[in-house]
Image (cartoon, one colour):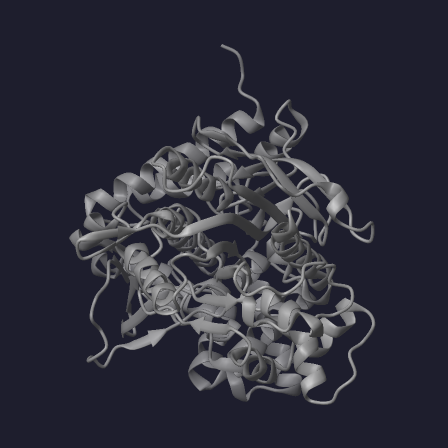
Length: 564
């Protein structure tokens, strides 16, 4: 029998993980320590996601992966032995504390010190994301247990020392006492003092900034204690539950439908039913800062820097000023109340003072209110949620006894993605979306081309792989996509799902066949290069130029097309 390649083994493992995760949501509950949970962990170890680093090495605790997970899970998750995934629940009149992670807009409630409830509003991708993180934490918990346990049934002196630190108040440590505590912890973790210190300081910074997480000592102690408790008591085993309401919600667009309805109602209220509408999926700052940044500075008597990106750096920390100015010139912000966690901005460009735009914005049209379009900017979706929100917003609006269709003239998707041939900060233009783990692939007739961008940033053009999740990236699979005849240039999570909804809307006659579509991504990471993966941290200032260059080009395409 022919031996499988590493990439083939990884693809099978990814498919196994997805199949098990889908089955578990129907089964009602599972334990990571049980047979199915162990198979889930085996699959995760087999395809060994880049983001989880040394997770598969039993000798050491993975710290960068731990930082990544803790940033995206609710505070106290490491203490819990009961985790519930459910659809929308009315917790507003209860004593349960709502907890929002630092870097993932997910809704969760602390029911008790040992129980957390996740309210799933973003579909299957959110479920995969949570289950991969829970599985990672369980794997690390078992590794800590193995590190601190002796065959005689007792635990190490380092563990007793850690317990004293946690119970005595870890946040009061400083100086020599802190150094000694970190050294002691590094022995448990199998890491160097420097590596342990870096993660300690990283988590302390976020804890102090907004109580987003527990400190490193508490996290490691709680994970290890959970491993010890599971060996002593059947009742203390970590258990994940899926409620019946969750089963009913998956695939039914419940939250996306409410979300889209609120946008359409606002557009009707503004009298935009006969106006040209351009949808942009982007962050909640770049379009606003491009269109209003210069005008806000001029209105307050400040000089506008000649360099566009220097101006952007100047206004990025002046959000209140930009908002006050923008609200007088056609800007409306719609915070999400549906549970989709996707905020929206509507900009009536007829009310934007085009004469105040930064001189590097190449817009040549005159301002004619009858033909000026309306921009609907939607915040980033999450994986499969992208299909649901785009499908709903492109559908006609049914109002009592009549159906209203909006004039959608273009859809632009600006996102961040992992790059394969380049580096952080580069730009990728999609020619197709290849759906990982399925036979579905979509050609993209992209209105953006390499020549639209200046040469200060490297621009790559080719197929993009739409992956199941950020935590399901395997180096061998990605190399295969990059070096084989697929010639993929990057990986992301939403583009293929957006394109699926756009294709469906064309088939149903909701939008015209020749409608302009634009897909551009800036590289937030390169999962094939050590030190450039998502776990290595955010981009910071180096992300400003590619983000705003893409925004600038999209706006120029939309507004200059009015003269065609």
